[in-house]
Length: 310
Image (cartoon, rainbow, N blue to C red):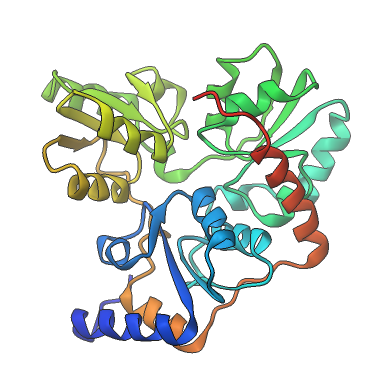
């Protein structure tokens, strides 16, 4: 993250002025740095923010997140200008599957339905039958007629989903480096340090870490859990940015990060100066070709039609 050289209040004031001039809405993912979270019009997970992009009455969407998120916003809101303040903010897991590689795997398993995690490029979504999130992967898989599922790109989410279905899941060998690097021994150690705490982890964590958890939840699920539980101490097993949000919003809770490794370098690239520059220049703009957008939109909309049980 570039060091801010201008006064913070000056940047915030200019961002506010430019938002009005550009008729822009600022969306920020839960994993963004606190300064960006605090100036966002909406704060949330990737899919909720992409849906918000389609719903808000703005000409410009500034998406503070990573590339695949801005692509999803562009797919669901094709009439709007979608800006990603740092165009080098990518997602290593999304890069672990390509459309060509997926097409080859589909040829090997023609009887399988392709379930694509939203943490993927629009081009990969377009090659898929249906998308899923970390919150609804189980419902999506169980909604399909096919008995065999090719699940891309997250191996850990696929293996977690396999625990709750009789269908045969073929996992792609991708993973989130941030969640994947946490090990079970770290979690056991922090549990020993805080024996009264409940352990809540993200399903992108490894099976060994998931086995140490009391709850396995998406980021939006974690927010609801912290808000509603009577438990006062909670160990949070996802990227640090979410815990920073939870600490602000629920100061009465004692929250502990499951591992110091839970920091996504790509999510930390966007700072106030990048947001200011993006609003001023209306760039970098993220666009998706219509042929790709049509296929990606179909997979996303099919997912949105699946009933939610949790």
